Image 1 (tube, rainbow, N blue to C red):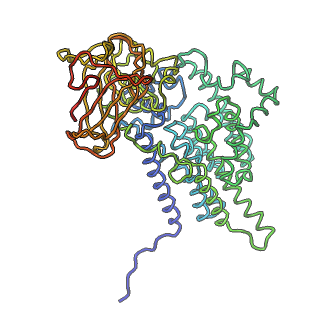
Image 2: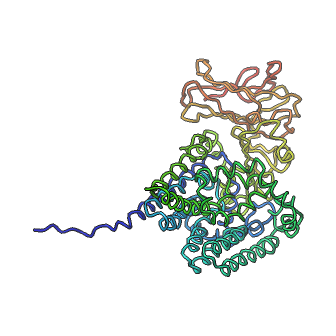
Length: 618
């Protein structure tokens, strides 16, 4: 009896299956990595918070509203990005910034689909897969993906479809993709001007090219000249034009200066700090986009507004501004490979295959990712940016003390944890904030008080906010009387008739490898000296397990700055030489003058201890 066989798989589908698998792997990996980056609470996430609040408000019917934009109360006063509303339906189901991070990773990866389709026409299926893989391991793409969330990350997918529409001569797809692209951000109007140039260069159709250029110019004039200034509360026109102020005080004068002062333009384009940016873009692609020169010419308007700006972020490989360049560079690179193959094949008996050339491109892109990329596979990988530390756990403890829905002002690295609410502000802006949470991880006294015109100093001395908790150099404030103290029945422990210790609490943390001690101080009068707090953790037999000596709030807030009467929660975390269990230790606490070593004596007893220290049971 003959064996019956099922239908054989279509070989033409296999590359597509592999491509989808690559895209899924990329999207999953970078979604996890970007969420880990946010969870680490290490880098600032202000832009993620802005868009999180915008989408959250939009999902609740308050279209594009935000309290985090410095010069507007609506996104349309900052950026023309109505396309971000695509995330609003997802927020109805799951209101979380992870939606934006996952969506960003997926949309950036999906741009590999039209790139693959384009490269397949010129190089064949296998080589096209290698080109798509080179895109997915490209270091600039990784930097865009891991730099919080930005609306411009939505652009590569529709822009890549516009580029393949040029190649296939599909005006309907071209204009549809161009119109979708224009909803991503106002500067895409300049990108569309480049698309018009590309249509003319690749299709030799000047009418279509001119219509596209006109579309870009008209939309740019409306968005940057009318809509954005209308919603800009600063009343100074389009906010980001200030990056080109050296060219003039208005867009028309800037254009005149650019046309009449080519030397000034050339000087800006060729400064040494801009050249590495170009090397980091073209180097991983082995300069192949230059051979697909039409796409580089089409990208010149983008290169122009990036390189002519006075903001170094615009021409930095580790920022998001370069995103519009990615499709142009890879489409140009794929076309460049095809031209190399044809050129070498014409002069050699047997030229290199497209697969060989695409493999070399993939190897170059992967090598560059190792040399300059931000991922765990790169040599310059910074684990601090992706690893939640004990300090992050301390911050989370303070976060849990803030009620859901309460208005909050916070540090830039904490904002996205509070942005799904009506009112959240970036410190030093307070607005109507009921709570203020500040993380000064890298700063200590006195540098911290030079930030934002001594904003922290003003807050610490404010009669309107009281500090209710701290962890290291992270402080939590609540609107209210800074001298309020609930347990008035207990007698304070008084040090030197200067400082009261109102209460003290200790607990083990980090699996018993550290002890966290929180001290509640209050100055009777402003101390004239900067007293050091000592915290000694000992066994019941008196063996020292660990100690910590520092100014209050992890060297952030010396005692000679304390306003009289203000309650100051001061948390110290002491690492231990060996793990302990709860109740298996005790803690000695006191104050001393670092210059002389003299301890402040206790003049009134409220907590147990000796003549100059308080003894706390573990």
